Structures are given as C-alpha cells and as structure tokens.
Length: 511
Image: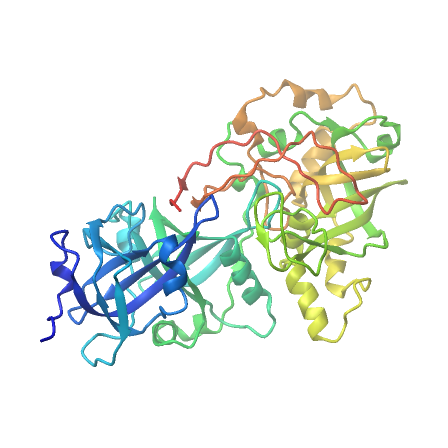
C-alpha cells in the first residue's frame, strides 16, 4: 500500500513523513562567510503552491549532483521549520530541511505546471507595495545605463540601469559583481544591437529600486525564452531597434547629496598644483591637477595584468587557481587594466598610471572582454595595444592622483573629463605657486560625507567611494588603506581608500 501525496499548502511541523510530488523550480548554492556551502531550492506542486527547501552542508555531497532544475520528483520525508530565511522567495510560512532519511526519485507527471516566473509589477514597486523580506522576479527593457563602476579595492563591480515595463513605469536596477560584468559583456559586444530585455530572478526590492542577491539570482539577457520574447514583441517597433545609451548626467548629479560641491569634494585634502610643480615633490603627495593624456608608455608588462576576480590585486600566476588575500577563491585570474600614459600641460609632462576602473569606465568594456575579443580575432600577443585603447588619449581631464616621486609616476585615484568641471578646477584652484587658492580645499570640514565621490560614466576613480544611492546586496566589505605604499613593478593595483560613508540604501542577505 502506497502513501498518498501531500499538498504543499498543508505542510506544517506536525510530522516529518511528508510525501510530495513537485517540480524543482529553482536551485542555488549558498556559501557563507566561513566558506561553508549549502543548497536551497524552491519546489511547486500541481496546485501551484511553492515552498523553500534547505539542504545542509552535511548532506551536500549526497544531493548536489542529483538535484536538477526543472526536474519532477517525489520527495519523501523532511523536517519542517518556520520559514526564517532572511530573504524569502515564496509566501509559504514553513520551510523543509532534508534529513538523513530524506529520499527523492525522478518521475514523469503531466499535472504539475511548467517552470515559470512570478514577475513583480513595477507599479507596485514604485508604490512601495513590497514585502521587505521577499525576493521577486523582474522583467523589463533597459532604457538607459546610469552608472558603471568597475572592480576596485574595497568596491565591487556594479552597473546601474533604468528598466521600463510595458506600461511605461521605470525603476532603477543595480547589477553587482558577476551580474554587472555579464551585462557589460553583452552590451559591449558589437554583434548585439537593438533593445535589451533582462529578466532577473530573486531580486531584492527596496525604495523603488531592485538589485540582484549575492546567491540565487539569475540574469537572463535577450535569451530565447517565451517570457523575454513575448515582452520584446510587445515593445513599440522603434524601441525594439534602439540599443540603450549611457546617461550623460553631469558630475554634480552624482555628488551624493553632500552640502559641498563636486569640485570641493574632488579637491578635499589634496594639494592643487600645475603639472610643472610635480618635479619638485619630494615625498608621496595627494594632488589635484589638470592635464591632457598624450601617449602610452609601453612597458614590459603591456596594458593589462592578471588579477583576482573580486579585488584588483595581482595574481601570483595567471595560469593557476589560488586563494586571494581578500578571501576569494580564484579559479582563473582575469585581465585587468594597468596602463601607463604620459600626460602633459604646456611644456610639462608626467607619467600617470591608470588602473582598471578608470579605463573600464572610459572605454565602456572590461579588460577581460577586450582581451578575449583580441584572442578571438587571432591576436594573442599581450604586448599589442588594441585600437580601442586610443579612446584614453587626447583627453583633457581633472585628476586626483597620488604622486610617487621615487618612481616619477602618479597613480590616478579619481578623474573627470566634464568640461565645466575641468575648467573650474583649472581656473579657481590651479596656480603656479604652492601658497595658493589650493589651500581653500583644506578649509572644507573633514566630514565623512565629503568623501562621497563625484563621477560620470566616462570617469570612475580607482578608489572613489560609492556615490550613487545604490542598493547593494553586501555580504562582505573590504576597505583598503589609502596610506599603503604601491610597488609599481610588482603590484597589480593600488590598495587605496579613504573614509567611506555608509550607503544610504543597503540590503545584506544572510549566507
């Protein structure tokens, strides 16, 4: 005699001998801050009811290769607890935890609904009709790219875009780390033209904007699935053909709401001086200057180095997996920009080192994408500078740099090519004598919020504190020390930072 199948909606903690016929809707791995991994999944029965399931670390080996997304199965036995996940993906008040005596068998059933998505209405998001502990599925067309930030010490890759639904409602969507990198790779691929529709699962929602979660979110971009193709077909014909553009918002729009101007923030605690005075500097000094990029300094290291996938430190061996000092287990180091460029102002010339984030922001593509594109086109010589790098030259910009007189180099911390911004720096702050209006910068009170960065899409400093009000699924925060010395020959990137203000919006999912 066989046991009957229970309904998901009836699950409670009265017993452990539950028998469920379900489809595995989603499965994902979670690694906590101690490096311990467990599995989570969502299952749905024939009535469309869903419940979250947890598979602990001690049962991981037994189930990790067995459980497959979209499979239909019979699950026997499991402990039932209150659904106390910090972030929930369904409304069920309980969760199931696999036991040593839990069994699962794949079956064929026709009455269980196919895998699908449960999209959150943009109108409800804008009206605040969202549960604060609930992860949602999101679909929309990218109408604009607001902000791009590359991986830097103490900071993470993030791409902020505006998503628009079919009703014309718009929300901000922040794509962090691998999600942001995936979007940039798609956007920068010349083969991809026209509208971009993205589907993001397990999105965190707060204050009218959404963000991926560190674990569990899936990002689908223009993929050939019914949900995306149906959405694309309902867009106006002209919008289907238009590729989203990067925002031209001015630097002041990203000043983080400080009572001080963007320029005051940029020059704070730095010596403003002309390039001609750099040769007089005897000690490491934080400076602000205006100069024009002139030409590449070709070194034996070329235009990139291989670094960690989380932080921008240099990998000990580009061909071997390793554990970085930041805690990241790196299977394959990735290319990161490190480009030395001569800058000039009048007759004066100096060597500036541009790091990963500045270059990626100006070029609109990661070093990894550029390197892979070269290899695909048959060019594997790392000393060949691709034509796209020419976009870094002949630009007049304001620079905030750390001058290292020992190496006759300056490491770029922040930069801006906004014409009005550069003109204000040049006219109001830069003079030939050290006792100058530069001292005005020191009169600005040393408040945390003054370190809020001001940046445009074309200029993102290697160490700018995050300025845009971004909702980040922060799990780990690395704050590097501005005072650390830089070995330009041995180091892949500077480890720099200042006092960082708290983010205005921050969601921290548990592991």
